[in-house]
Image 1 (tube, rainbow, N blue to C red):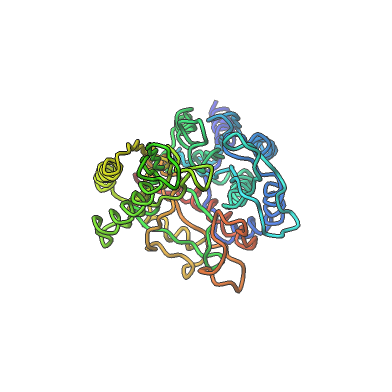
Image 2: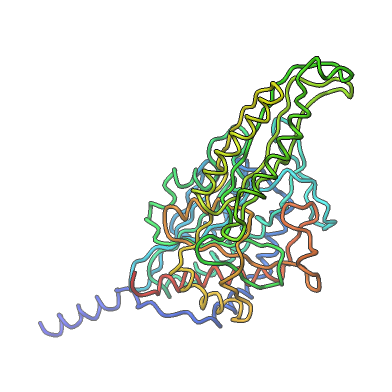
Length: 438
C-alpha cells in the first residue's frame, strides 16, 4: 500500500506543471536575433500592402494566420471590426497574472515617396475618394515586432506562468470618416481587455530618434487630441462689392488669428503644452465671388482636462463674437480623437530597468519631455494601468531632428531597431508576469 501511494504521488508530481523559470535577458536577445530576419520580411510585406482604418482585412488575416502557426491557445478575429486578439497561456507553475501587449495596424492616406523597393502603390477609399495609402507612421513595424515577440513567447510558454494577451488594433489614426469610435475604443467595447481580464498593458511607437533608444515619461506623455470643426455662414456677393454681402473669407481670416491668439495669450505654456491649429479652410469656387459659407477644421492638443474645457469654451465664444461682428454666424464643434496618454507612475518606474535589459541602460530615458502628438492607446490606459514608450528609428548617421517625421511621405523605419522592439515586448511581458505584489 505504501509503495502504491508513493508511486501515485510521484506520478502526480510528474504530471504537475513545471515551476516557471526566469528567462534571462541574454536568452531573449538570442531569440530576438533568431527571428529578426522574419520580422523584417513581415514588415516589408505589410509595408507593401497597407490598409486604411477599419479596412485592415488582409493585415488581420496575416496576423491571425501567424498566431495560429505559433500555436496560440486562442486567436479571435473581428474584435472591434477588424482587430485581432491572441491569447497565450504559460504552462509553468506560478502566479496567474495577465498582461497585454498592443500594436496598431492601420495606414494613412499618403502617397509614399521613400523610394524603397517595397514601397506601397496601394490605394483605398477615404472621404468617398480613391487615395494612395502608405504606412507613413510605422504601424507595419509595430505589427511585425509584436509578431516577433509572439513567436518567441510561444516557444517559451513552459518558462512562465500567467497569460499574455496580444492586441492587434485597427483604426488608430483617429476616428475614420462616418465612424463614432476609433480602434482602441472599439476593441475595449468588444471585451478585448476582459476575457481574460488584463491587469496592465504596454505598447510602443517608432519615431525619429537615435536608433534603438527608448524614451517615455510617467504621467502625461502624449497629448489628448480633439478635432475642431467650424462652419461660417455669411451672404454671397460679387468680389467687387463686398459690402453688399457678408464676407466669410474675412471672417475666416480673423478666426484663425483669434485661435492663435487664444493659445498664445490665455494659456500658460510653462504649465502644460497646448496647441490649437486650424489646418484646413474650404471656401469659394471662383476668384471674384465671395462665397456664402466657409468650412474650417483643425486640431487641439492638451495635457489638462480642465484647461482644455476652459479653452474650448473661450474659443467657441470668441469665434461666435468674430462672426457676429461681421453679421455672420458660426457653428463650432469639438470631437475627441484620443485621450491623454497617461503612463501609470509606479508602473513607469518599474519598467525602466526592464527596458534597460532590452536596449541597454544608456539607451533608455524614462524622463523625456511630453510630446503634442497623440495616440489612442490612451483609451486602454483609462481601463487598466499602462505604459506607452517610443523607440528611436532614424537611419544610421542621420540627425533625428532632420529626419522625415511620422506622417511624412518620406517617413521610414531603420530596420535594425526592430530587434530592440521585439526584446522590449518580450521582456516587459515576462517581467510583469514574474512581478511580485500588486
